[in-house]
Length: 492
Image (cartoon, rainbow, N blue to C red; front, top):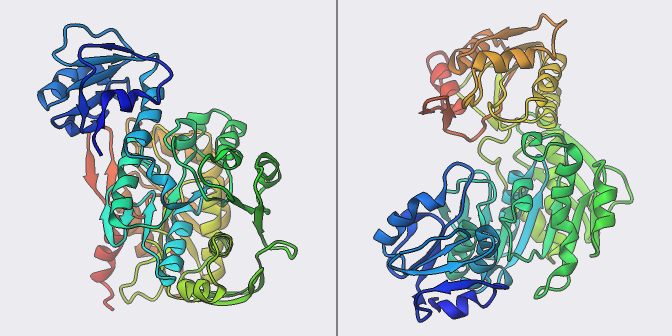
């Protein structure tokens, strides 16, 4: 996959080269720790560190060329000067790896909630069809059965293109990718052409980054508006949840055929019957390929939407109805998504990643439907993130729960007590909450209070196995904390 420097730079509009142009580029990276002999080091300023501080490290590790948008003189390597390093990287990375997204079918899923569940449902469906699949998202990346850790919901352009190239070499045919609003705004998916784009929903989140809800919706819309601009892939489709308030605007922005889903008849996919139970659900869906009778080992009203999104995307991709049915009937819950913690206790314990107002409301509403007695909630809000959602989540938790334990999530650089005070402003007239800063103590207190027929929802961190504090990151898994407490009192 090595390319001559001239061939690699051919995709750039302009650049200035100092030093030898007769250089073979064996690889490229914007992380000096990943640089090996023969690599091009792409130097740019990041959010947390400045790549220009690591030029010497890159050279020591074997870099033969440096790409920069600043003046760098006197280096023992070829220097490529460009107007903007980030823009150049967005063009160079896919080109170096020969545009792997053009060689595989890619289904991108965007939305505030549901992305992880939908991509994993699609993985199950396409595996049932006999296809080699890949998943890229919040929890991990999967190439076939091989798990690959990732740092972001959608990796940056360099990491993503490297990952796609690895998947192509592994023989992957279909990729299901969570596409975040950050990824779209920051062009992390540059060079990718999507076959199908799926909208789950858009509710308040990431306003610390986007500043306004309109800008957040605009970022999500980019995935759909760009489908008709595919140069290589033709016949792209959009899959839209018509019950979402942003659906009409997004449908108007895309110039490709749309497959719709929602609760009302008239959509391409909609439910004829729903039966939600504590540990699963039964659905009868109307689809363009006929009725689908599903029995799935996950539950919740919000998961009805996730199922419809997966069914719609699979149908748009040409998967046979009977294969969709068998794939979904074999599906089990994604880690940290309405995940049951069982230790023989006479009440239900659910761990969920819900960390937005809409996500928390969906989870608590679904939990209320299966609770025979009290609904107890444990949640907090992350530090250094959108503060405006904190009182909203406090209000939702107090309204839908019998008792709320407000605690820490990932406080990061903020003082946990201050975050809790922000949350409490949403529940000033309520007396059904308790504040416990230590998350472990809050979880244990909620479990100690629970009795037969109750439901305890532990929300916010889901699959995460760590907690980010001001000065360190510690091991912390909501599921394991619950198990450790429960096993001393009840055993399966």
